[in-house]
Length: 92
Image (tube, rainbow, N blue to C red; front, top):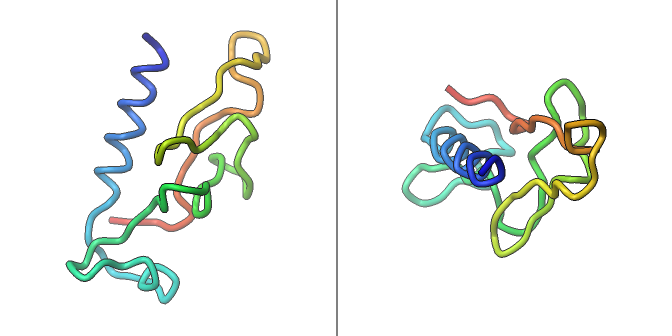
């Protein structure tokens, strides 16, 4: 149940952040014709990092066009090399 909730929360966060806003030059490269900025390329974790860090934990993976947290390795009750992730850019 926790995994399904996390996936749903991540999907909502990505959808909510994927709105038109003022763009930097880098963001404009990922801009679609209708003005949206794609935060996820469906293949890599490029543009994402752990909160408060510059890199993303190894437990974060991409498969079948989705970002997911591999919870198989634990650090106490938490997932090892997991943690919260945020986009590299800020959006309104």
